[in-house]
Picture 1 (tube, rainbow, N blue to C red):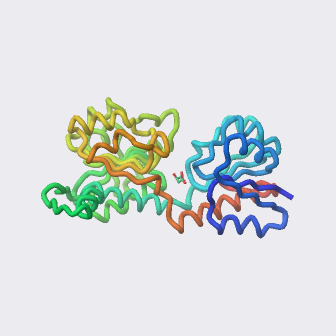
Picture 2 (cartoon, protein in one colour; picture 1 turned 120 degrees about the vertical axis):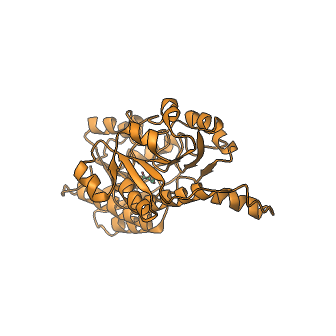
Picture 3 (cartoon, protein in one colour; picture 1 turned 60 degrees about the horizontal axis):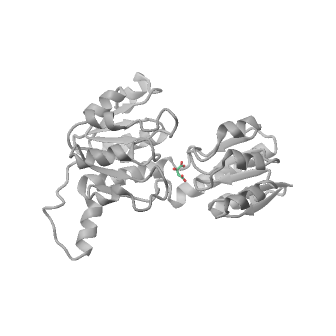
Length: 311
Ligand code: MLT
């Protein structure tokens, strides 16, 4: 029997997939302390997490039987991949299942940001009627700069085009041909930073992308630019963003992710130009079902020495 340990909330459909397997014992234990996690992982053949569980080198070391670690979602920045690789443990994710949900959430944030919807809601339910305070901007004819035109960035681009935005994108893997097919202008990072009215990032968080948008980048942006991050906290420097809003360079920011999560009483939340959600990009029924099923199937394949896709 293979023991599969699940340490973050996982959609029922994924758990059922594993429970239906006659060669698998499923152990679901969420909110473990670091010490409890070390004890539990020692007995597991596979570990499934979302973003809360920090799969450190110490956890990997304790998992002496581990063959695979599955991430129900895209980002694997909470897993120490070099440590896993050194021990021959496969790390698999579920890269497709939450694409649409995350693109839709980013688009919802884009409209909310342009039209001050969260600020207007808060004020109205407090009994105020401030029509002049919340004058927004149209998306029509504005330039949306997308940094990272992968799955989510591409889905966002087509939604923005439906609202008649001009999309320019920086992505080192984007070919002229694909950009043309998508009706997107292939640009350098510099161009996106200098020309866009709205800038949204859709890259993973890596050594290269940490603080990709920093003080120097903000200095080159258009006056009144609006910024979105529904990808990973840390791609945009929060301190630099705070300063750029304070100076008037940035007119507003929509954030779904933070350098530390949960962010607590963050200085950015003292600024009325900032709207925020608690990492909800992939939080739809559909996305959670998709990623849970995908990652469970991958884990079963690995445990059974069958072909798998997303390591
Ligand atoms: C992801 O990386 O898949 C998303 O950020 C969603 C999540 O963390 O669960």
